[in-house]
Image (tube, rainbow, N blue to C red):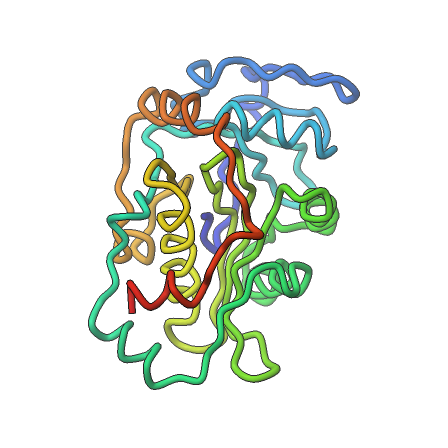
Length: 252
């Protein structure tokens, strides 16, 4: 899950990349990604749902700013969270128990992605959650592939995250908080939900940061991540069978 930062790229690096066909892109193997900037793999292609799904199924994701060409990444190492190892602190449990928050799934996917984009728009840097990206992930959501975990305080959305499900692997894209610890509750809820249905599941965080590390994220070599992805992408996950309350009760 990417932070509020600009996308690293340079004109020199772009010249060394595979140029994808705009209509029928075929991705190179992730091991062909550059070392500088780390993980940059290809340029071009499109954000059609079938292209995005093909990318995620190969451990590749799009990341670029407005005004840049469409860039595709597969970093090494890869940040992940094993759901059964999610770190829930005492202070996070207190925040949850003292709040009137309710966790929901896919209640308002569009509002989640808008909130994830908002801090980047207000900040000094550019935004990688462009209008084009929003529309692409909204289409994935409507097709049943992208999901949001949301934290509500009465009728107000106060935190959440969204990502793409590939088998029993959740590819996290971004998260936000409007109240302290709300995004952490969303991430804990996601971990509980995944572990509830399958002991063989994983959260792909893509890039490491302090927020994720505090929740139990670790980094693994890209080769190991790709091997785990190959095993998980063929598994089934039933979102309709999720029991949020029981998943959270075990954690909180």
